[in-house]
Structure formats: C-alpha cells, structure tokens
Length: 298
Image (cartoon, rainbow, N blue to C red; front, side, top):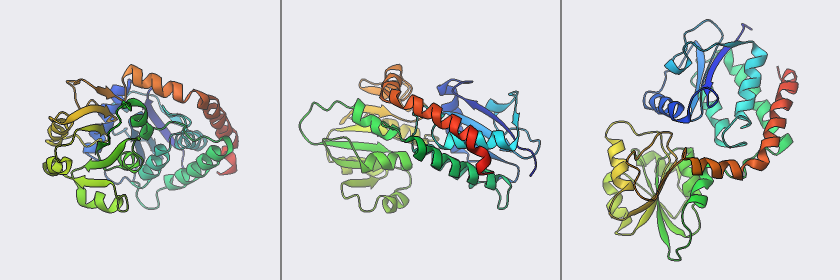
C-alpha cells in the first residue's frame, strides 16, 4: 500500500470557536466524494488523510506539518473513533462520524481498508476499557436546565441529526412533549417514528405545535446557513421561549439572551470536565492499548 500522510487541526492547535466555525462551513458546503483523501471534520477537529501528495482542502490545515505512515494514520483514526481523544472521553457520536467520513471516499479507495481496521480496533478498545461516556453531549440538557419546576414542560429541539434525535428520544425529566424543528421534516418524521411524544415541524408551523405553551430550547444543529439562522433565533427567543442550551459549534444566538448557555462556555466545559473526570485514565489506557495493538489488525 502507498504511504499515507495525514495532517490535522484540533483543540490542541486551534480554539474550539475556530474549529466550530470551520466545521459549520464544511457542513454548509459538504465536500464531494473524493478519489484523493479522507476529510474528517467535527466540532473538535479537522483532519485530512491522503495516499498521495495533495493540498489539504481547508485553510485550517495549510502550513501545518503532516505525519506519514500507514501505522501512524491507523493509530490516529482508531484513537479518534474510540472517543479517546474527544472532549468527552468515550463519546458515542465520533465513531459514526469517522465511518461517515469514509463513505465520501470513492469506491475502492485504499483508505477504506485503513478506516475499517481503525473502527475494528476502536470497538475493541472501547470494550476492553469500558470507554463509554458517563455524560455525553446529549446529556447536557439534563444537567443544564433548571428542574425545580413541577409542572409538565415542552422541549424544543432544533435539528434532525444524531445528536438532536438522541436528545428527543431521552429528554430531561419533566418534559412531557418534545417538538423537533428542522428544514426537512419529512425525512426526520421517518427517523423518529415510534417516539409518540415527539412532533416534527418546520419553523413556519412551530407556533401551532406549541399551542401557546412555554418551552425550553436545545439547539443541536450545524445547519445555520442562509435564512435558517434567523428562523432558529426567532424560535429560541419567541414570546413563549425560556432557557436555551446551544450545542451548535458556533453561537446560534450571538446576542446571548437571558438563560442562554453555549457548549463552549467555561461553566459548561467545567461541567463536562467534572462529569468525565473518571474517564481520563480509561481514555489514556485505550490510546496506549491502540498504539500497542495496531499491528494485530493491519
């Protein structure tokens, strides 16, 4: 196999705000299927893997030194997919993000085999060290929303991706109804079929779905381009809207209304760090184990 070179920008090289903005831009204009390399982008990282000399496709990766070698690339991808390098150790969403990044490769691309081996190794590492987040991104609404009120409440979840669906499937206690707002409700209705307490709407139908009830909002989307950002702002700051937890990679509400908390706020990051403190040793052990056992799957 040809040598693999990879280059990356993550929260050790860039701020979370910079990475989040780049991730949102890539979500707004998704890269096409590639016969050159694999582009992995999340709120916490942007990585480029290629089997030939190629200019990285994002400015965040320009002028950064690359690391070469099939083994090094395999170790890196496996450590990422296992959640051992994540802001939340053992978070469950990154595995699928690695797999989806590989799906944008042309059929027969040699990196398909590397990703396959990385995912196998990541699965083994998670099982070996119990690397499953005790508090994941989808759990933040449980922690951050005020639960002192006794009356049933309504939760608005903005987004239709895997994070939004996880929140809607298991809302915090006290929410008897969940409304999901998305630009493509037809597809989302199929995905959440069977969740009887979930209503899926466009922004234009939100007021009718809420029927005058007050609600808290979770923003869990990267789809904030065009006029949709204004629609999200209107939904999260309407006359019946209350607190907001923003899990978008950039500030969905730059004006920061009362009761608004963003994923990268210092107090939210402290909550995550404290909740996942017990996972730090497992993540380190998993990283070391992957590096030591990578030859087994090559």
